[in-house]
Image (cartoon, rainbow, N blue to C red; front, side):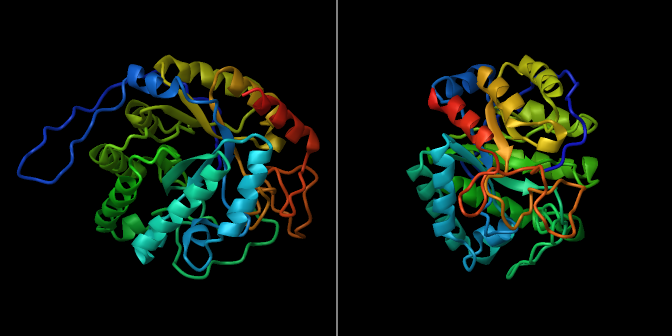
Amino acid sequence: MKIFIPMILILLVVACTPAKKENANTEKPFAREVWSKQQANSWYKDKPWYRGANFNPSSAINQLETWQAESFDAKIIDRELGWAEDIGMNAMRVYLHHVAWEQDKEGFKNRMAEYLKIADSHGIATMFVFFDDCWNNTYQAGRQPEPKTGTHNSGWIQDPGQLIYDQPELVNDLEVYVKDVMKHFADDSRILLWDVYNEPGNSGYGDRSLPLLKKVFQWGREVNPSQPLSAGVWNNSLTNLNKFQLENSDVITYHNYEDSAHHAAMIDTLQQYGKPMLCTEYMARTRNSTFQDIMPMLKAHKIGAFNWGLVSGKSNTIYAWDTPIESGEEPEVWFHDIFRQDGSVYSQEEVDLIKELTSAD
């Protein structure tokens, strides 16, 4: 996903949302407070250093093709997560979509459970993402489009995107969706974290995304899962969104696709919160965000390291954001991703480094 500004420069005081009193006459769950520093660090202290990727199987152009019954491919997921395991990865960040749930609620949760079983068999924990403001703002169920040749993420879709503005009543269905999924997996130890909203405010939405961001955090607190809630900061110009995200995340997550100096400055800024940190997107080779420069730094700070992309596939993320290659030939320098679909690697040097960094754990 695209990042435009390298550092979060705002200095905030972490605030907690007051817990609501339970009413014996209603079924509304207790809404817990944001985790304190002590709670967050207690949760993290015995956790390993998490390292992995943003994972979408190579057979899927977007979240719907990943999760719809007719295109969910357990065989490919198993094979590709096996390659991740082989190089020492132990966590993945995986996007959901409300339309796949809307089509088949129980089947959707069953497929999530099947994914978790596969991932766990490879020693991989999972961070699920609910909403997303990136790329195409409209979508539909059923057969998904074919990739545009040489174009980065040509078929990736927002959730809910423009639909929430065209149909404001959709918010009621989204609440049911988030609570249904989160309740079902609220105590599942295979789930690392709930990333409730990817890059809110992207695609020109700005503060228009704030109401839904507030709602999804509230819904999560009402469910009160055992796993932490977070939404990663990614653009320092979105002051109101950044403030809310940082104040309401149980642990700190962020995106940075810049070089090591800018990334280190962002780490310094965010460490003030005194909470565990996970970098949920990084690694864009042509922007000098590389495994060689960034991954050792993240390990040194025990910051979770989730690069964008595992296997080159329909998402076309070997191509840079704004630099399509109309011929479809492979770029000399891949933007994202590690493996080809036959299991061969883009860079043996990179893989050797990843193995070296992960083998000591």
